Image (cartoon, rainbow, N blue to C red; front, side, top):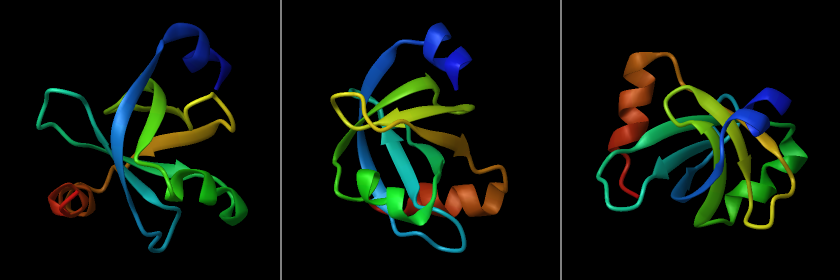
Length: 98
């Protein structure tokens, strides 16, 4: 996590948080002025999911298609985010309206 935080700047993203399925919650990162959607899975224990669940904007530090660190505006707490590598599942999450 430290290497991502040193290497990349924080950027705000509009988000749509999808409910947790078999794993943690899934976050759709939506850059401003773009129709691109990046799908990230939140890596955290159940009691920390509440930090992303009620948010419409999150800060992201990293490369959206490759993973990074998520935080609420203000910078705490830090949560890992990773891309969903199973293509059909990722494409299904991309089509969910947000």
